[in-house]
Image 1 (spheres, rainbow over the protein chains, first blue to last red):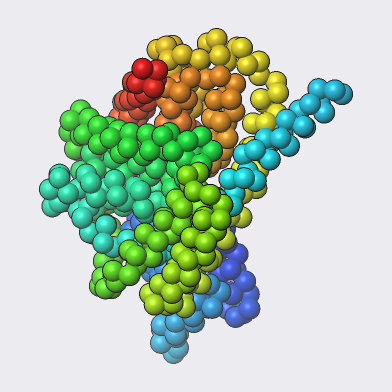
Image 2 (cartoon, rainbow over the protein chains, first blue to last red; image 1 turned 60 degrees about the vertical axis):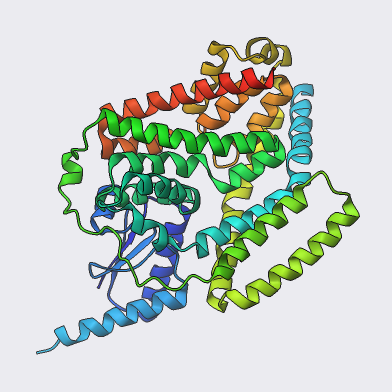
Length: 88
Length: 354
């Protein structure tokens, strides 16, 4: 799973990155969490208000800092979508 | 050693003057208002007017409203600006937004009103809105709207997902209005303390009732979270800024300020504007700085010019904006701002000396 935090580096974006990393650790899943600070790349995701949360190249949240519970829900949703692809 | 003690005393005195009194009456409500606007203001209602088919008489006012209400946190200004451009808005409205957002920072305006004077706060807002129009339309007139390669590379899709607009209850506007009333009532110097306290109690009860009627639990939590976020990111820097302003006040000779900046000369005003452009202060710190200059004898017009110029241009944001509009347009943007702020300072200084 690939998770990106979009934001120019302000406090909200850091908070989202921290929360997301915590959730990833707690769920024990295999995921990379990276911060995207380059404006050009952020715009390419059509995110108008930072921070933005992108899971597997899909924007799942933008404009606010989701709570840990919300982040957990979003990641679990994304996991469920991934499942069918894995398999024989 | 004595100097150090004087500096520290100056800093502490400033903290007392500039913060303690104004905190309760204006900063606390201001933070709640900022938190509410950030968390609860219906963004979609504004953004849908900023597409390519919006006629100018809608796009410009809406971009200014967007600057007033959507970008309470300075970090979202640039993605919003880029998004507005990408949605097809003309360069004029987009620039109007870009200018309005930092210039009409709600917290800064409220703090200005309290620390320096209502006249300054009003001047700041009205002039900033006027400038936004002037600057936006000038840029649109000066530059044909061909996009730079960096912009043209992205397909002009709808830059923001328009979720179905949820019904915005009229009570939400009552909620915002009530908070503004509380702010003005609490900060007003025209009412005696007893009347003020009774009035506040009544207003607060009304607010609680409106909140229970209008906001969901999530919205309430969201509001509180955002308010707290503003408090903990801004207050520490503000305290430091005020302390430094207090120290500077001890060191900068008052007659120097009075002599060169006391009256609204073109040179003084221009110098103040350039100072604001070059120096970067964290959000809200420009207000105690301005207060310090005022106390040292700076003229009102010169002061206004500084207040108008300081929040709008900071080196980091300039560099990022340059990526979007190019160096040539950027230089014009900065140039027009300098001219407008200087002119405003001179005019204001002229009128207040009549």
